[in-house]
Amino acid sequence: MNQDELKQAVGQAAVDYIKPHLDDDSIVGVGTGSTANCFIDALANIKHLFDGAVASSEASAERLKSHGIPVFDLNGVSGMDFYIDGADEINERLEMIKGGGAALTREKIVAAVAKKFVCVADESKLVPMLGTFPLPVEVIPMARSHVARELVKLGGDPVWREGVVTDNGGEILDVHNLRIASPMELESSINQITGVITNGLFAQRGADVLLLGTQEGVKTLKA
Ligand SMILES: O=C(CO)[C@H](O)[C@H](O)COP(=O)(O)O
Image (cartoon, rainbow, N blue to C red; front, side):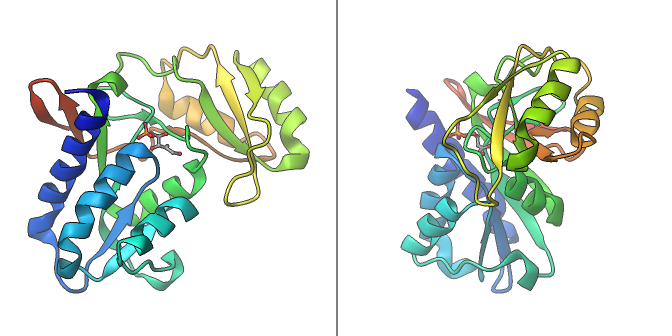
């Protein structure tokens, strides 16, 4: 199977995973990116089994709506059982780097509300140590240079993702050359820099389940 077929397989596997738990009142938390898109497309086939979705980006909201799936504002829902999203890197403790699609802040917020985070990824995303993928950091635009200098002090090489404005009006610094031995500590340290909205380390709230697309089929890993 090629990478697109692996993404489709895990998208369908995520639907199979949540389907037995859905009812008329269920709200499904939906992530962003090409793997999350595969999940959305598979989810459309069972849209009669749940109430609607909360999306972590405008792009995912549009895709959900195009399938006729109602999209709710997070402030209007009291909770959700599942959040399904991809990752740029994930380790065996199910800690992740996310934000390649610049949706990290909303992803972190929706994930915080959900009882269970189900990560969907092809096998290229599973790594022994996080940090080969540049770590996205969303910043308030006027703080970009200040935050970049502070990130250099932490040992990284930040690069401004020029031209990208997030759904929240923020800008993105991609931090290269980090070997992230302690993801939880680094997540906190970066978030303490004034001007940071959030960073793409999902360690304090990692995934609970990983559905990993491999050539031998979809494997289920638990935290
Ligand atoms: O964090 C994300 C977007 O902000 C995505 O989950 C991440 O970039 C993975 O995307 P893809 O499934 O396209 O590889």
